[in-house]
Image (cartoon, rainbow, N blue to C red; front, side, top):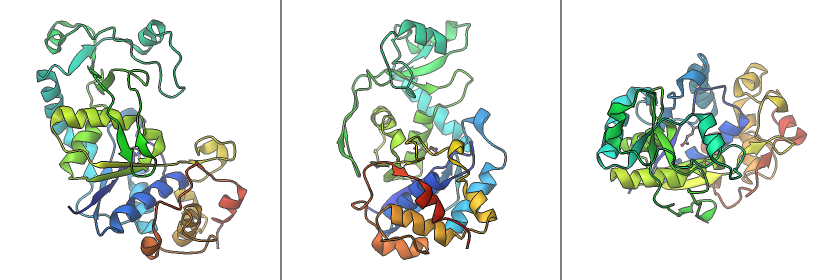
Length: 310
Ligand code: GLU
């Protein structure tokens, strides 16, 4: 089977060094196997989309030499397929309408939870069947009934198991403002695009068992999953504005070459002994996941110095 990888940027902000590192890894992983790479713009989180972000991300990828095959897919254009998948889940009674607000859930669940995950959904609305939606006056989301937590073998981390009952519980597949949620859209779109390998940041590890449940529920073949460590600032937190301006567009404007950014990223992945200018294609024979450090990459002064103009 030929490999099909994908890049799936969200136009919710500018792409920075951390995004570039993940895209480079995803691109090299697919291309080094002679595979294809697809591009999907994940624009369904409409309230958070930034107007210039789509144009900029195409520019960033082009400068980095991360090319893709076929037409780029814009996620919001696939709404019909997302609706059809939701209908399948309703017919199979695998989802139920949920009228809980964020504060309802926070009040109902006393259990401690991971900072970014929110409390596990306590199942307040799980008594409903799909047909009950017709009688609801309040806005409602659709939640997927978590019956088990599929374990998987991660291409970087190895065997991985997360208990979804603790990590979030029944999860939203359709938003109360009538839009697909990330978990459903990503599964439907990856399957439609023939994606066979997903390589992305390890902040999404907890999403993978949820997505595996959806692949099962929709009768779709699941891709392989590989999660790589993120880039963090010197304080150990995920790369963000407070760490200085690491937006790719800012580098380009300052005259930093894509080859210099790529060289620094390649060095951070253990493919070069020191940062030196290199193109994405030149990295193909050097690509291996084995040399990528298992801990987050700290974008400290040394890292940022290596991407100075000149
Ligand atoms: N659009 C997501 C992001 O930019 C990535 C989703 C995925 O790779 O599944 O963080």
